[in-house]
Image 1 (cartoon, protein in one colour):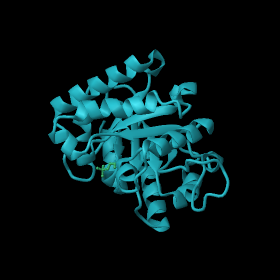
Image 2 (cartoon, protein in one colour):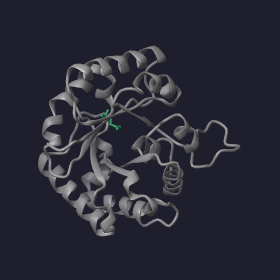
Image 3 (cartoon, protein in one colour):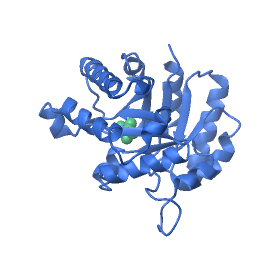
Image 4 (cartoon, helix red, strand yellow):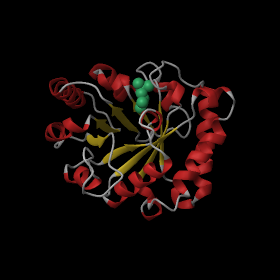
Length: 252
Ligand code: PGA
């Protein structure tokens, strides 16, 4: 099996103590079980620096959950791409369903965030996916195509400069945190569609990796990863429990 990306999005969970403990457990387990995949942990922003100090000699990469849409300046409460780069953050989520639907981030904001990250050489993990009602109304492919068009054909972001700095993460909104996962047939068809859609937009995009996220567990990870065109997994809840995250990393 080719090298996959396994990313753990810790969301707004944990304390400094529990985050350090979780990181140490992952580090210890990785010393024992040789995992050849690329592992990324994505803690809350306030824990990025202490965790960076724990993992800097390991192969684990550090990701942020969010970035400001603006350059450094008078934007109270925001963390800029330059600051993330300075803190050795290599990946950053953009477009996660919780930020689109709870924080109400629109395409304009998402494009600005993409630009900030490209300018700072940070790899974007760009999340997209349909809601439950869109899924029920059989609009999944239409919605995904529109979301991808907005990302790739936007004149507002500078992605064309460095397409290698993008990873896509297909996350059906109805699968996040619900225990529900698309059927193997649905996933095969959707991932083929995403791959073709991306390739058609620009031949330079053919090596962009595409992850699956939404209720990934140690039980379903092996079959998910066997799906054609799935290049890795974005894991929420299961990444908060060291044993589950490690089992996922070592069983695929
Ligand atoms: P989940 O979350 O694995 O808990 O469903 C995935 C995500 O939100 O990235």
